[in-house]
Length: 495
Image (cartoon, rainbow, N blue to C red; front, side, top):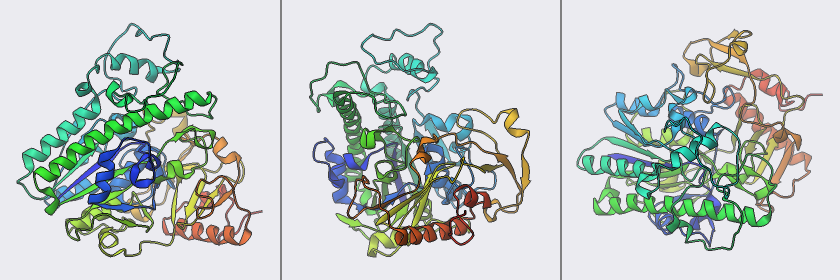
């Protein structure tokens, strides 16, 4: 048995034909839906990038206890569990966050791995002199923007870009090991994450009149740009999406030519979506977690049941992916893994769960039962908030000395395997306070799928709050999370 996961970053389900989009050029995503089971209620868990990947390894929520950070010594890692049970695992990626301080323990959990440089502001090409940035480019501030223009000079041809190199390496692995058994391949590209850097042939798929500055890297804030700029940015994203579609097609073609469908699971997924002007926002992090970011595409082919062209509405999340892969290989799941294997869901539409949680560490806490979405904002000044870790690193730097001068020793959680952890005063590093400014929000997705008209219904809100409370308890949310959100011991509001 073999398994292949193709994971994109910031892949918007609303831009895919199988989720209702009729203007993007994505024939291979349409073909994918015909060959797999499409999931309609897959949601993020922990946001953003590396918190999601910790869930991919451990099968449990990250964001209730920790912000962006590495695999901890007590964590169960799905690729490592595969190794320990005789299943070879390989990672092919251009996702440079794996090689920063806050992600540097993930890639070594695989049997082997390869890394392809140059995405976003990857500190790759060394150049002391400032790059020449044409006046037609809309300026941004910061090191990453400067470095990106240094890097782009070395990626003029499509085959030089990180995504094509990542897929080429993954395809090479498949061809080399097509006659072998017991392996798992994870092809993971940073695209279509911003900046939306694609070749002209993909841009030509979306002709439109635009005379403004180059704008392929939206800022993380409210939209201030004119409507024609917003539309242009969407076309730039769509061009990169079509590039992703092209390379997805190479994997599907290989599945056909090597007859891999008969014994190889295929999972196509993403970590989260991306705002392209919806709700008057760009990007992520700074706004309530509306479904443009929170609800994600998911496609799975399971050769055991052979289901194709069908849809499933059961609630699923990233924490289910490692459970699904381990169960597929017949490997027992560790007790700390909270995810649900999806094999029975694919085969017979088996139920999963009544509700799910999702959010950022220090952000509003979100719960959905598939119909209603309830977003619970911080009750006061977004405190108290703590990080629970034995590896104090942020996204791209270690904790500052000042952050480590007031930490306490915390008793073990069940998932830390008897290890006490550091309890460090936290800061919502990927959440702007504006995400809490709108207060608590309740939406009915049946009558308001765009989440434009919040409900005021105390009865429904109380039920969603009880679901939230029960899931917090089941996932060992620290006591201060209840206080931060103004939730009493039994789902009742404080004060």
